[in-house]
Image: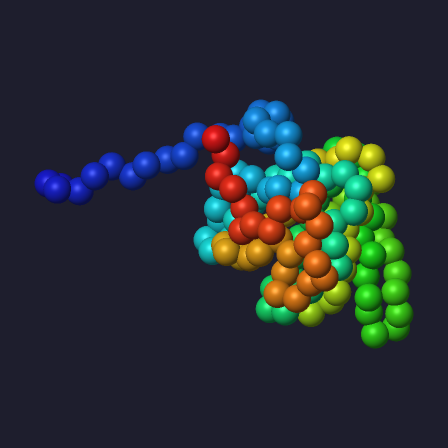
Length: 137
């Protein structure tokens, strides 16, 4: 067929290399997209901030270390603990605050354009990057 270009197939991405390419904490990098979702990796340590995503769930996979997520639910406040290899989804509309007691690496799945500090949040501390994700580079 004349005028049609060959499809472009992406190359595999090493999450280890992607994580080694930056040092910033709480500043996710977009490693790929799936339909209208970004797959992001982040290095985390210490506290994030209380925030809420009004219209989207937030998926977490702990690649290394440990992540705690405090949740404010109708039944009260609780904290889930995610060791390496664990996944958890924070339902949309749920106020939550991630915390990493040790340096950790996580993978996030969120709709493209989702702000890391949600739609509603407390004051953003200097160590948290309010971003829709950075490209690898």
